Image (cartoon, rainbow, N blue to C red; front, side, top):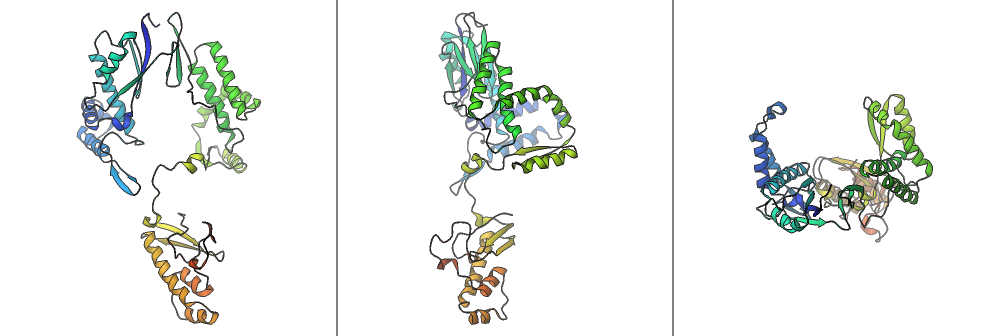
Length: 408
């Protein structure tokens, strides 16, 4: 129940991971490790060993951008497995300090936190003072909170919309941002049927677990069906999902004792493979082998392939269907230069049939590429006009800087 004169507010940390103070976090973690009497039961490492390894991990974050190498000087690295743990431990210390040191007239009656999102119940006239107070706890000045108050007696928190009723009680609804488009995995997309049915199951499970009142659950279910039907979902898919929900927990318990294999999904073929594995009691799961994320999102700089070592490479000929497969433990760029040099030497000697025959007699070439150039007199790439090749057929004479290269 929310009392008269109280309201919900939510605080959010601005860029928590990249603003988490490393020195203070290490100090907090060290104290936690030293106070842990059960540490010896879980590891043979001493607190000093743990802190030394953790400090090294947090202070040696390097990344490359446009060919330059940079070191992160402050905060934890985005994407690092240790970052959420360190940031969460720091936030735990910060919230304890905030609550303990808060004056009584602004101290929240309710404080619930998930990582960097905090939900509180406070007096209406204490929002600004409370925000100012918690923003002073971090002495580095990097951890800053923003806040959001109720609008029409409603406030979003994570995936829930908290609604304050007239009598002070609350109910929960599903929260969708204004930018939400109701676009889900389309039923006609090239994905396993299980993935499509899991979309229905996930949305329905969220409705059952989050929404508190029956009438709101009915409205949410109608909204889910309306959105999914626009994405091509037929009525039988909803019925099949409902029937499977009853035996879902039983199927999960049975699958724990079996083997599991994850395969790329290919319509028609994958289903036949699943039936073969099923005969031996092996469960199969499918994953899409090509997604829009893989095609469009490239957050890291592309690696210069000439700096790759210990690799297998392929050089197809532009003039015929022959392909050279090579292997080198050295830098690929070094081996490529050798191929260029030898191929150019061979191509300069092979102009007529008699000259070509004379040039290859008694000559011990260094690779099959050189033999191919000398014997077949294929034209070097530089003699073809631009646009003759389209990225899928470079000549076996790699005279330019570009070359088809593929890890095998």
